Image (cartoon, rainbow, N blue to C red; front, side, top):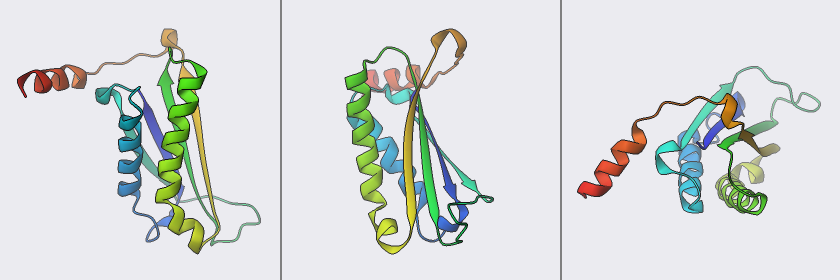
Length: 132
């Protein structure tokens, strides 16, 4: 962990480079210094069907959910969340300037007793680091 899931309205196609937005989030997560590099995942899901406010077709949204494991105190989570949100928000400034747009970000803590994982990326990164 952390795992980021981005859902976005299909009308952002051509206005937002979603791959670049994912990279902004990934980089910001690394820069917080609190997440293991091998656990970071950022994925984006295009929402073809959606309705916003009074259903004007030019309204857009990007909603991001971050799931993290237990063990970080509230101030640490808040600082990291703010850092990540500000990086993504800044990246999306042109969208805010050109259209009606909603950006949201929520963080959830997974209960370790009901969360299963299998990941050999951590070990691969350790080997790469050890071998230069």
